[in-house]
Length: 304
Ligand SMILES: [Fe+2]
Image (cartoon, rainbow, N blue to C red; front, side):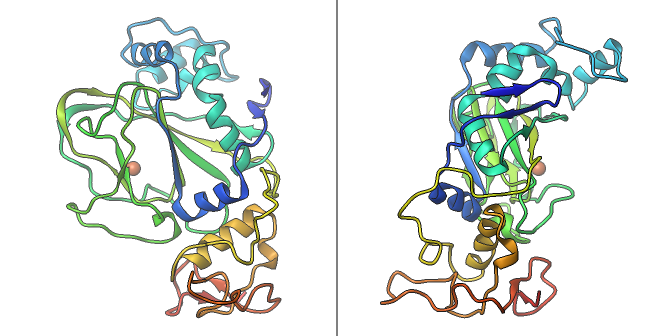
């Protein structure tokens, strides 16, 4: 792990394979249950509840200690990023860092803004929503992470999300179920910022903290994660109808090959079925279409 304090970036070995990077393109999330040590989880709760003094490692340029104290008690307590213990064990958590490095390239930019989602449980679920200012497209310039510093079983209303909904506008009814990020204290969730989600229903009594923040890309994308000799972009599984074209576009963008991505529609690549007796037609076309991420065209394709 190389941490650059001046740039607030880090570099380390990427921990995802081709298959896992593509899986993220298809699903839009990953969960790491209980990866932050307990003494750090407890310290985070104490910090957020004002029970321990702040010990910032420095005061950012243009700010004062009073600013940091005000920020600490706000709904955006970003001053916690200045605590060395939080930096080492949460922001630079080894399991998280390897994933960020795989998806965002070298010299990953650390978060600058924290959102504190503090809820007195029990509470009704939120409505399903895409967060403000979300963007649908093949690019992955940043990734959102959430951190639960206390045990967050289903009863305490963990974040709930719908796999694959980062690929375009989606709607769900309140009674529809998603995937719950339930887990022990120290659970980190990683998700595409555009994914449909909500705070789940909570039935237990207690205080639920959740911190949410973004990691940032600082370099152009390239396929420098763990490559697999058997991975073939022609035959890889990109998803079903109305999904494969987007996941494949994102994967190509991450490989630094978005300019080579063209599709011809129908049953052609990147779509495929396990029941076909040969490889999909349409791979490697130099002319063709792009997926219509903006949804301006009825058939879902855009001419580049
Ligand atoms: Fe949200």
